[in-house]
Length: 136
Image (tube, rainbow, N blue to C red):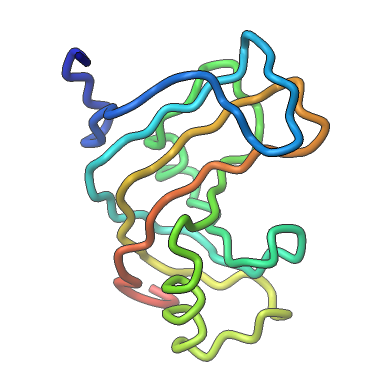
């Protein structure tokens, strides 16, 4: 049973060791899942590495996203519901090869993943609820 922990409107609903594909577990690896809708302003762009859209919150919103104090990675996340995200972003007529585009989005079910010993970047994820405004 979890003690109710809420960070910037997002409640911790699960946590444990991160166990991503191709990663050998280390005692510092961590996954924390939060629920609670958040409106975030930032830029979205097509990630050729992820073959998906990812979102990069503006600095003031990035500071609101839960993370470990020593996590120096750039704050961004990709979408756990990528087919819906692709459909919504494609409906905004964004060319995947274009530079990042400003938007306000609403997310839920944010998953923070931390694996400092990973040979590649470990992505955080969130469920895209809606695009509130493209190019606000």
